[in-house]
Image (cartoon, rainbow, N blue to C red; front, side):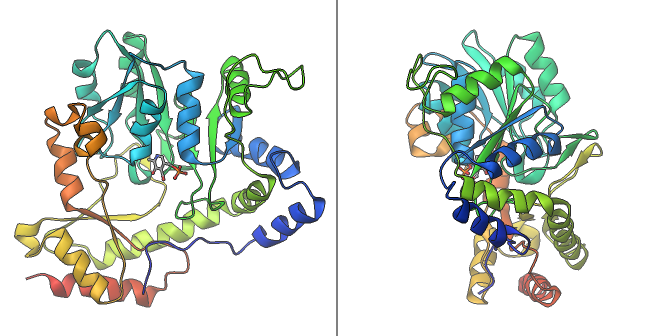
Length: 368
Ligand SMILES: Cc1ncc(COP(=O)(O)O)c(C=O)c1O
């Protein structure tokens, strides 16, 4: 079976984990955590980085740091991983779902204005499948309406928007280092930001709300969103090879795109002129009329032949917890179309050219 993802742990990961173990610093303090935070921020063109235990906690921390609470509304795309909207709900606020634009598959800036109400506090711009959202346009609307912007960059580390790295384009950005991500520590996450006041607040909330100058005194209610020094050891090794990891994944993308070029009914992720993608999971769309089979039929065919795939995210506004609150009353045609026709193909450094050829031949030959 060819899986969708295999982490690339071929550098100093093992060595650094053993170093962390032998140092006995295995909890949420240690040299690897300090090093990771110092190195990750500049990698994202940002001033500060905070390590957290996963990308969901990073989003939750962003909401708490920005004082989002009951009665507030936050604009989010419907085509994203469920954690983006769940983080809004964790703090008692309401996610308001906005459609994505066909040119980026990210939140459509032209639809934001009409979704704003007196309760709207901010916008979460998700850099979907490694492609940056059109942040300048989003920031302009946000500034005009006194809203904050958070980048959910879980799927897009090192992606670039007009020459600037994601993670530096808004008030707070969040990242995930889950096992299938571009950079990974198994479970892990980070927040990047450049405002010192927000940094102090986020750090306090991440660490149970403890006063930085008075031990065991808790002026606010915080959370335990900390990452371990062992996980940070893995991340330090990943950062050393970040450019190589990206280049290897990009080579997989290039091979898919050349072998599937002009295949009837098969489409690729669009890349805006101003964007440099982070090559996360290769994306394919299936136009069933032209291809002759639906996305799900193709996925089943690939699975029968030993190739695992992933359907695109299910529209969040149609998931039970959100539907129950009336979120499905909006019409989000681009989200529905992509969610029903898109799939991710296996993408990892050790995926061999012969395996990519096998996958592409299966896709081409199944068309009728
Ligand atoms: C867009 C997006 N946001 C948030 C997350 C949550 O990250 P994690 O799984 O590390 O909690 C993910 C990934 O899983 C994601 O793809």
